Amino acid sequence: MAGTREQLSPARRGSSAKSAARTARPRRSRVRFTLAIALSLLVLLTGGVGWIYLKLGGDINTFSSDGISGDRPDADASKGENVLVIGSDARTGGNEALGGGDKGDIGRSDTAFLLHVYADHRNAVAVSVPRDTLVTIPPCKLPDGSWTSTRPDMMFNAAYSTGETARGNPACTQNTVEKLTGLRVDHTVVVDFKGFAALTDVVGGVKVCLPQPIHQRDLNPHRTTPGKLLFPRGEQSVSGQKALDYVRLRHGIGDGSDIGRIKRQQAFVGSLIKKVKSDGLTPTKLLPLANAATRSMTVDPGLGSADKLLSFAMSLKNVDLHNTKFVTIPWRYEGSRVAVVEPDADALWASLRDDRTIDGKDASGKKGARSNASPAPSAAPSPGDGIRVTVYNGTTVMGLAAQAARTLEGGGFTVTGTATASTHDQATTLIQYGPGEKARAGTLAQRFPGARLEETSTAGIKAILGQDYAHHPSAAATASPEPTAVPSEVSDDARSADDNLCSNLSYG
Image (cartoon, rainbow, N blue to C red):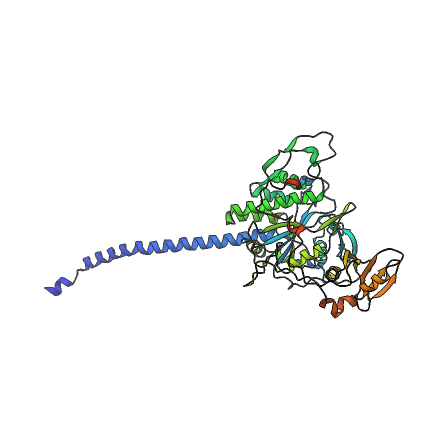
């Protein structure tokens, strides 16, 4: 019967249920197994990231922010970022084994450059400041909590040694760079001998090129014999101690100057960046690199956590090698020291402030930005033609002498130089002139309403700017347009991170 055929016996119903269970169990097992794998991977990944952040965060050293000046450039002046990188020759923490000297020595800055990452995050420029550059070191905090007074005409690397501690004073160097450039330093990074050597080891060596073989005596000029060969001539890869020897090498190569060594260091950093980018920013490559860096690196509090440090590092991934430039601050020798050349240096800082590259391209990242700078309109001639003047800044307003120099040159005057006056509390602009130069000084004084005239026994004309010039409405109205590109002497000497290693070896 039909009804009988549709009813199954208890035995057959049990058999069918078991069969269905056997069919369903593998499906559920596979689902549970897949979920278990996914969950395990999730735990592993999040746990791994947490471990990385915990590991790196525990290794990051920071310096105190209470030594950073309260009188700082405007944070909104530029949309790009400025990072001060200091190479320290401190002998603490085992660095004496790599660099020689005693671990109780005073910490000094061996090299320094300001890295400007443009707002478009596709261009960057590193501006080196020679350690012998004569600068004004603003007030800096000492270990006992007191502050120094302003110190003009000091060597740049004296800022890092302020306080004479073994670890140095990075906050004072940051204050000095902000005073020198008028740019706000967003972050400061200090790398010591160990950190530098470790970085080069982790990346598997950095390619360099030498124009001649280098022996031990070239590293230590006090040797009486050449000693063993350290570096053969030509292209080669260096790491660890050899990399450190290469970038610190000064004597026996090129002209033996610090400027020549800076050129070599710029080429090395460019080669290091090229190596890191070619290896790829994968977790496998990035973790050992970050681990090596943080162990011997000191940063400002703004980079004092792993997420901030890694976030900043990853923000640089789109910067093109060819658009990563290296230049040196406009300079000239002043005796055995280095002097900053104005208004060339001020033109360089203005270019960075405007996020304009050293060849005049707009790197602000704004839509519709022009790819090339428009030339500044030329100023009409004036009665100032032929009058030579030296401009001094008698105030605390940064860049005032350079601004006045541009104004005067736009009006036909010849500015023979700019400098900081011996005092910074000049209320009224003072025009000093030598015998027989009163008429020319009077012509100059017309450019500074209310200026006083003073005859001296010294030949030449000087304009010592006062607070009246800084606040006078005509100062801004008559100023020349800000330069849109740096002087050709600076841009023509620039080096890119992708330049041929063995080209332009005159730097040694």
